Amino acid sequence: MTRITLFWGEEGLVGLEARGHSGGGFKGEDVVCAAVSALVQALLVGLRDVAGASEAECERDSSDSLIRVRWPKIRASEFDLLTRTIALSLMEVASRYAEFVSIAEVHES
Image (cartoon, rainbow, N blue to C red):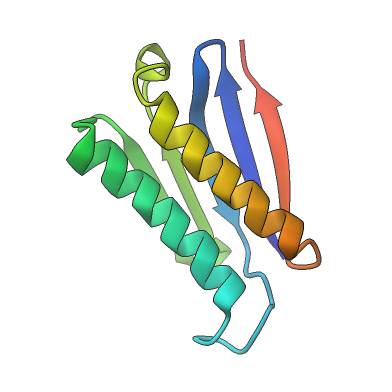
């Protein structure tokens, strides 16, 4: 199962983490895993290359099947359209493939 955690600050989404493989198909043919990966990569490209958030951080750990993306809380409202779109898209994937993807939301102060 892929477990996605959305981290919310006062001004909006400030990070996300995806951990694990969905198990929705054979390795290299898992469309659920591919959908999650594509959305997380689109977020990173959107933040860095479109929104100019060079300070956006990405941590990967292939041994733990983990990708974590964070950006400055003070810029959360500036990135809101992009980050909410990705969050809602991930929620849609999770609702359609609930046996393979779960989403948790953490509200930070």
